[in-house]
Image (cartoon, rainbow, N blue to C red):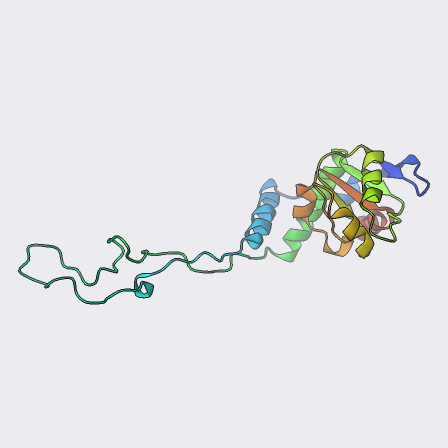
Length: 209
């Protein structure tokens, strides 16, 4: 069943645009969207943690005391992990946490996320962002027209440096070109604002799938 989305024309007039969520229908297990979020957040981890291992601790390597006839446990150097100031046992070293799910799974998750946003009424459409030079108040004006107060994601069809510079100072803003759109960005934003040409391309892309 088609849903009506708020549509902002070039003259600043609010209208409605009809979209059929079934065009984005794709069976997806709920766990898939969870896996997409885990994957995206894993890629954001810097993995620069590093501790000193036993071989990296500065200090003498002299044996603490004789191996036998002391009545105490055998020990080598004081750099062992059980001693104060010694190295860390099984400590963390820099590593890459990022990984990638199969392309088919990522595409399915994107369609499922878009359908969810459409069904929940969390999608807005503008005929054209029409921002030729960086002006934050132009983006704020669009948000006020739609009554958006939370996080949002702007999705133009092609990259606009002026639009990107205009929205980056707005709290809760997000910017993603259509070709780079992914399920994680869709899920994370409270409202998605599509450029008309971008939404039309999505409809055509999924029309025969």
